[in-house]
Image (cartoon, rainbow, N blue to C red; front, side, top):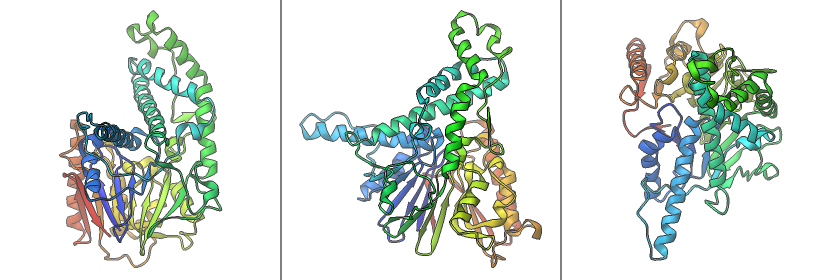
Length: 438
């Protein structure tokens, strides 16, 4: 297999290609801005080479994962319109972004499909709450306003993606499963009777989410909608033009309604339920393996591997591990780096929210070269080289905080490599993409 790591700002955007070069999976699309600046150009090279994307996989609906996918699909539609007019002798100006390759299939658990009821009310409350909270003088409410604005944007992007793949537009197959046709077109999850999907020599196994995790997601969104604090927010929104915002009035006496602690359904160890419901895939080809984790939590990932019979001896080794949630500590558990090992660890993030976090990087390093109490259980790894790949470098971020953090990451990596006696190497992406040959 071959892995390509695109510049994706704070998000994920990876391309997997089969060992024979005949089949490809695009894994998330990064942020919309990253797709416009980097991903679209990189992906368009496939089209020039006559190659298709067999599967476009969206792990979940956060904007730093699905936003770039929306841009890619909109670009495909723009080129379709251009081709129509060109064929009829009235060609418009070419689209701004280069022509993407053909996309055959999309795997994406849509927001409305997952939540099923009250979706319209939830979408409206998110969209309306974001500006009210963001203008508050209360720092906590400002933070939640930012979070809701991001989620509201993600939902709109997810709805747009769902519309674009309809037969009358791009005609991309949605959630089709050739090996388990009984579940084709439905929500994707780890089912007991699910067979691995085949894309030529690529074998794709869905590890997460489970039906229970999707039930929790549905329950959480509706609990959130019914919270008293949410209803207070609705009243504040109605009154916003009648002086509710004067002197930061929204910030006085209004408790933040919090995605990190939904009423009746708290976040799992600090990780929001939408992230926990990420689609986690194990991709295998010719003895090589790649674990794609989205923003899921370590406990869910390990459980998915156990349920699939991959942790029977208490450990599992893959060639590539895409670290969950950009290397955030909240998504990690003590067992994760002790039971799961890789030759290549991939971290997608540009320093936003201090991701990838230095503590997570240290734990990866210690799992291979640290004291015995922190070492991974996988046998035969003593002295075996391992790599950490970063989707960006200190040259890419836009804010000074991000630059500072990525500079610190680069300094840590240089020091860690120097201490490893050649066992560990770090790679930073200051180009369009990085290629990893497995």
